[in-house]
Length: 81
Image 1 (cartoon, helix red, strand yellow):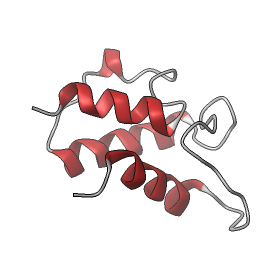
Image 2 (cartoon, rainbow, N blue to C red):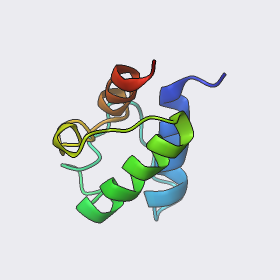
Image 3 (cartoon, rainbow, N blue to C red):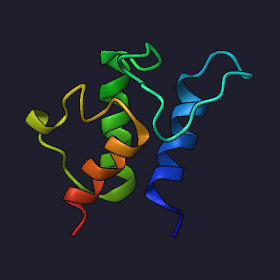
C-alpha cells in the first residue's frame, strides 16, 4: 500500500498546482500558502474519505489540519481503523 502522505502529495500536485514547475513537499503550507482554498479543502476531504473509507468530522477538518501534507496524513491516520 502506498504511503498515505505520498498519495496526498500526488493528489495535491495533480489537482491544485497550476505551475508544473512548482515543487511542494510534505511540509509546504497548502492553505496558508494559497495552494489550497476552502472549496478545494472540501474536495480534498471528500477524496480522503473515499480513498480511505473514513469519515472526517467537519470540526476536525480545520485549515490547520489541512495546511500541510504531514498534517493531513496525521488527520487521516486518526480515523483509519
